[in-house]
Length: 138
Image (cartoon, rainbow, N blue to C red):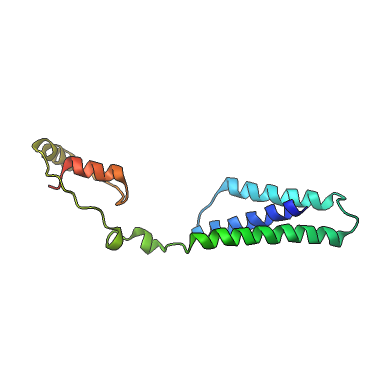
């Protein structure tokens, strides 16, 4: 019963975190539903003689899980705002391109530009940085 209460409370904390992230996860919702079902089934089983003892067991499990979730989430810190995540400059600026473009790279870039090609990348991606270095600064 304490395990069922703990599972349900921890799943609730995870669902709150999903709401903070503005994300949807079908498997997370399924897991939360199953945890709630485990708690409901454990509550129905005659583990103790009195309902108040069952409530104390479930409450203890929920309190431990809530404390664990709070410790995990507080260790992660606050979530960045969308503006902070999308900030292209400042501390999150890409490394400068050190290599110069070869004749072949310039020809390739002209052909790609003529076709309307665009490069989408992330400042933190090592593969994107490698592509930029291969094509050069020009």
